[in-house]
Image 1 (cartoon, one colour):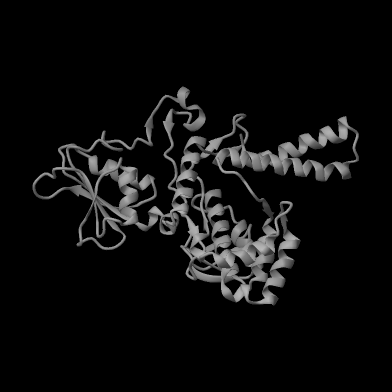
Image 2: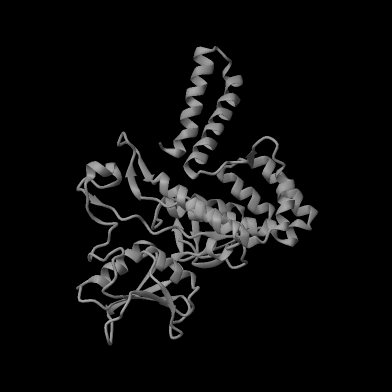
Length: 372
């Protein structure tokens, strides 16, 4: 199922039924077909995520511009300078404050991005996180003028489900810490897949993996683990040392972690006596990067090494290591059975490794995370 095609397909089918079969006037049938499409989209998203959807808000790209101007601009940060004339995106690297029209160009760009539409989604989430930060700030909630401009922008550009008072919701947000509002992208299998008819490029996902991922996010949220929600593997550099006699093991495990989104550090052989057990080392045992590396390598123990700087992790591989990459290969790549995997794999039978996970962006900072 192609999720972003659900709305259009259902609306078209419903319009045909109402107009051609039941004989309704197209002007009368249009809102009915649109409502049916929205309901189907809501159910589809709920089915994919395993989460009940209580409210629905639909915002077009123009809405980004109107709401941005209503709040006096939006703060973003780019890793690299951008010039892409098709979208009008022309921005320097680093932190900057965008006007409404600039924000529209920022979220519209889809060409010349390292990860294509995935980076476009991250751009949109970056703007939404910054807008949420502005909405929750005391200067917005205490300003009748700003709230009035925001209400006008929402009324002009946002479709809201029945019974949801969005401005009352905005006022309730002041009870939230901004860091509790986060934007995330579901894990994907590959970004270069094709639809079943071979006509459209699609991003493929595993529904079971999505369910587990969403459940984990909600558990972290319920337990108040806002730092875990906003952690991204790109914040951690991982060094891997090989304490075994298996050639290439450190490089294989390093590649596994790189494919997970961690920054690759040095690889090499362990110096000194062979280590007794495999482990993950970090300055603090509760380091989020170390915990994430441990999880991705099968639950290795995490121990402290005060000589390591913040943001750095060292993986020590011993003879007991049986986790990902232990056979000297990255399990997310290699020759597989294409008949069993469907078109998750390339025509040559080689599996494309999944792209690194997108960062989770929260609304808790005046200094936004830099994105592509």
